[in-house]
Length: 307
Image (tube, rainbow, N blue to C red; front, side, top):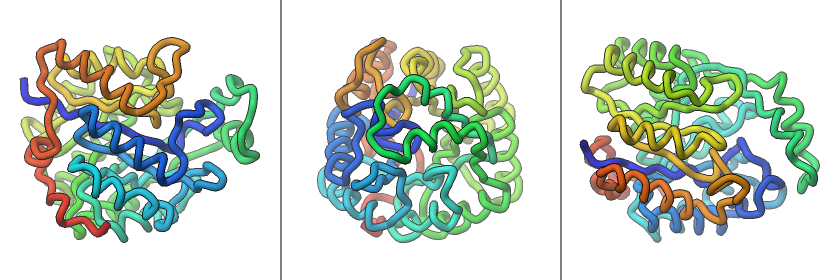
């Protein structure tokens, strides 16, 4: 099998600070978490920003500037900036920082979907910030909007800046949508697909679904794609292990799962990277370096970013 790319999602909009004291929030914390993950073996760092005062997901480029230069100075790992941000942000807000900083990679959600986080609210006993509880409880009426027009905008704007994409596929129809843009000539290979499991509104974390996705991607894209996978919550490690055994790549990180094992909070992103690295190396896979990941994905190089 080819070398395996480990991605790490450092912080994000899914989990609130109340659920773990170890979730990076400030710029310094996000930078430290990213550098630790890279040292542990993550070749790609998937990043969101937060308002350091409130802990809320942020699209403000000044908050991104609080950690991007430190990450670039401290590691050769690939920076992958979200274009998803949060379901309550407009597309222009979500794109403000990627447009300014021109990273090597961006994530791109391949469709509009329900993004139902409200079951988490029942598990939290103490709230750190006043926005957290109403945000989670209100997500029973929350839609993440990414229409074909939105996708085309992201592809054009970030493609013009030399970025390549992590195509986040929360459902099998998202593969069909990606094929539509390939057929339009808006996307060229090698494609990097991220199969996303475990978000209520998308696919459940089921082995049978992973097999179907892989079979569908083979039919639609032939040998012009690589796939990675992530599963939110407790399914993170079992599903990643299955994906790695099938020849895929993996993503872990505190954005997707706050735990290292049942009832044990991960104290850092690096702990999760070390855990999955041990598993995939036990399967006979060799972990890719950042340089090898760049070559596999056709990235422009760290010297071409604007931070």
